[in-house]
Amino acid sequence: MSIQRSSFYAWMEKPKSKRQVEDECLTGLIKHSWLESDCVYGYRKLTSDLKDLGEACSKHHVNKLMKLKGMKAQVGFRKHKGHYSGKPAVVADNMLDRQFAVTTPNRY
Image 1 (cartoon, helix red, strand yellow):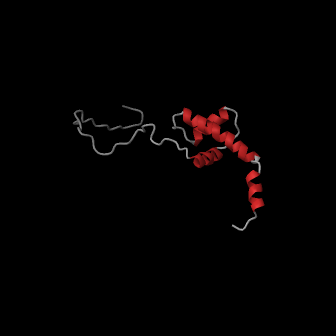
Image 2 (cartoon, rainbow, N blue to C red):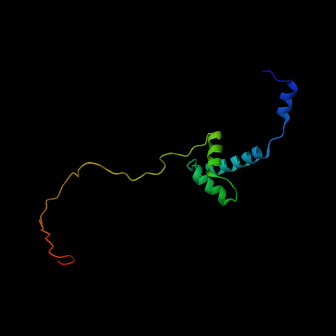
Image 3 (tube, rainbow, N blue to C red):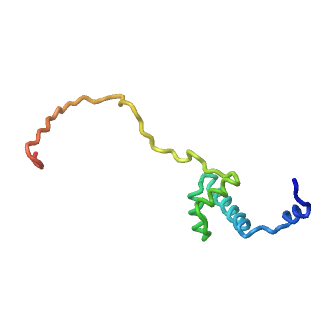
């Protein structure tokens, strides 16, 4: 690397920016909420939790911080109702065999 040693050490000693400090604080809050949910919540619910705590953050920023720290929502936590295909096992016979012939609307 073609940089001066003094530049490298000056870079190492440089104080953190305001954004880095805010991100570290926000990451700690995200991790705390995520662990409280037993690692189930994703970035949308965590954003809502943080807003309830009074933190100003967007869902995209929370998503980025979660990716950087390797936090993921648990997929498949809730069982979704599925649509079952195929024919029913037993089809009942049409015992009534009713004929519906209507001569005028709203008349029986």
